[in-house]
Length: 165
Image (cartoon, rainbow, N blue to C red; front, top):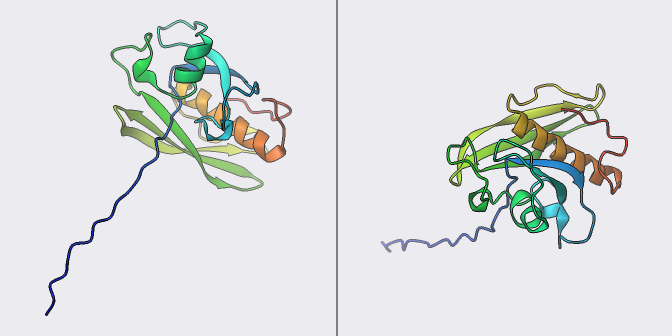
């Protein structure tokens, strides 16, 4: 009887970018500065502020492009030592004419700490189960806004989407 040889499987993981939980997005940036904006954690590049220090401050353009939009919170000079998460990831779990459900995962030190679903009612134009933490909810609103804008073929954020936290 032949002896079975162990099979080696190689898995190549691509680097996944996540949204920084301390980023306060304000407006989609359609300035051509991102090679593939759809691949960004919030579905597009955003301008905005940083609230990691406890106050909202305007980060540099470099920070907006390399830290805030990419969730590289560990490299942020304003990052609090004690924090709930380093990054938040979103994806569309389910979509219909009535609702869009998002999955979210909050991570600390590259490990999942919290996860769940957030559902947006497209008919009533409100969240059925908003997240209790305003940071997560704010980023979910932005992710949903870019997702819906992409579906509608609109370029600018907020054009008739009626998305509110």
